[in-house]
Length: 387
Image (cartoon, rainbow, N blue to C red; front, top):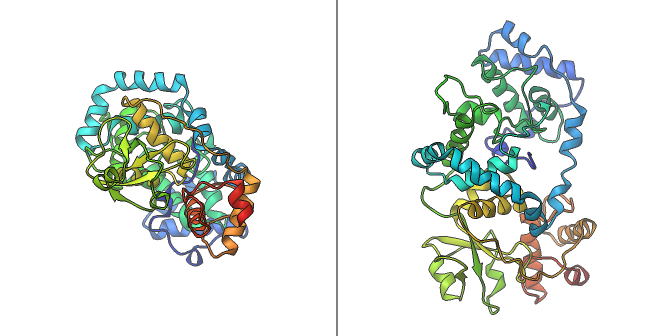
């Protein structure tokens, strides 16, 4: 269940001006073939590999329709964290105990995090996507919105094919080209894939050990710190300076404690942490530790990452969060109007898309502070009216 493009797609991407895109597809595909040959791939192999290549209009439709992110955190978490999914996570944890022990020992990544992404991405391998992967990547590389992100992924599939780990005609996955049980991109599989079952190949679609250990290695390589927490529910004093909250700010755990912040369970870590208020000061409250930020390398969506991180804590024994009584938020059309107003005032909100993402939250908080409102980054009808 791929829900948004991962930040990892953006790493080391060439400038758009340097990446050819658009125009007649056959001529553009000739350019991809030529680039592959220039990289050292045999011309006859390149011709065979791209023999079934074509554009998939359904990929572009999926790329432009990600309305699920317009849900609030409590709605989103409620829809993804079902009783069945929790029970399945517990069963998978027991069934693959030795594997998760190995992932933690070798890469330092907790089983809760790996189970959460395994569950959210593909329902534990049950649904891995039915888009032809090569054609999906070709479609997105040909499209001029983000060619620099996807063209390298096309060429990575050729490398995987030469290793016997990819079939251009039959390999399927998510609309954005991710493959396997934990939905990794071809370039990440080529660079970070782990042969967990020792059969000589990295097959994330069919091998649980390959999928789990590859995911763990990727998180480790992206900066995951062994033995450290990622998210913790907290109880906040009503007198807290709300302008200190937000994923873009951090204070040491001891300083938060001195301000009256306490963990709902356990103790605050001796680490820099950010207070997250997904639905404002009257809703659920968490403290995000450094490992939380690594998860944005897997998925860009604030609500997705927060929900996955929370599910991981739930798997490892944390109680369900206190939903509080948040103030009513804005509907998607109101969020669009808000984003337009914020942009007119010079704030960078990214795309005006009706999704309350991290950039919009930062801009909301700045305007709340300017207007003398509680600066908790949760937009309401009152704020929209004031703007």
